[in-house]
Image (cartoon, rainbow, N blue to C red):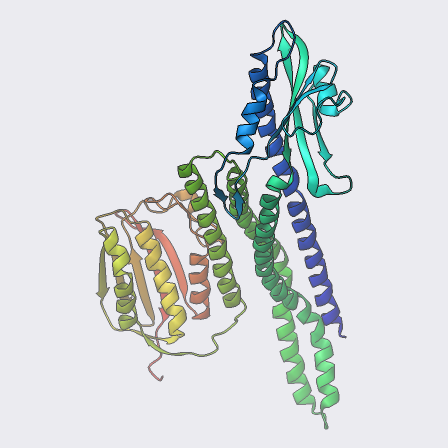
Length: 480
């Protein structure tokens, strides 16, 4: 196993361990959060039940006569509630009442009537004027039978004369916990795979220069006859390649760290939104319209993560290419007209006039697919920032050596603080009509395509309002 392979495997192992630890911490934190939410609901329910019982307290004596028919009716009540993957058809809430000595006067299940509960935490602390709660198992050694209890004091003339304790089986919300764990793992693994792709590429870049000397020595040993001129040329090529890749590695360390940190930050925000919406959806009494709103939030944020991952994978693949593998003459005029025709439905929906002005025919050497993606990205940006009933102008003009593709809108333009950031990865401005941001990878994608075609991309404000993007490409030489 070569040194490069060992370093590469070491980086992968460290990365895998880090992601596994992060997912473990996130997943292990789900159950306590659900328990906290359930306990908060039990606190309110216990206070409600205590207030109900207090209505029948006479001279400090607790009367639980009305509770028995109430719970008998509740437990036989028929209903059907489909809560995501959980189907609920019966009430699992438990209630028992004790007197001031901790003796059970009422038990909704009828199992522990007359028992002494004075030493149970929920009863003992509540009788002492403190907050009392406990989690106990119906069957010893079986955590699936755990029940959470929260106590509330029964008062008469400011004196505690008993306790109402409300319980809920942990298993009733255990399915939600398991579902949240599965969803979190899938989202985490998907994001980790995208980062892993970036890590693999960076690892190869970092390790490659150190293996050039060994590659050169292997080549020398493989030669049947040695030629000083050939060895010198090979050495010069190796040094040139090593210098370029070492420069990329050294200057790319902080770049990659910032890249990963920024990407992680971008993914963390929608993950937090999904998790928050999922927790709120566990509320059994949530109105239907609010439930639909939170479901749409989850769908929208999931789509956002998918879009970020897809666009970043495309951009990463593009950044690894130093040259275009295959090129061909590309006529820009027909390409621009075809792109404009494809964008016309999106423009019409917001009454935006799309004007194409091909001033001179132009041909460039390049990849037609990538050029289409670049121009389409610029046009999509212009449409996104254009107000309704405005126009977007797409023009092609040439000089003696260059072709310039201008995309001009009549939107708000680029703020001063964003002028130097528009081509940074993940940087995006809110769209005026929706107030939403994009992935922030589109212009970075265009910049990489322009560089591969030995061109450039500029974005600035137009003289009479709006923004104008200019993609400059070298014209195809006449000898082609």
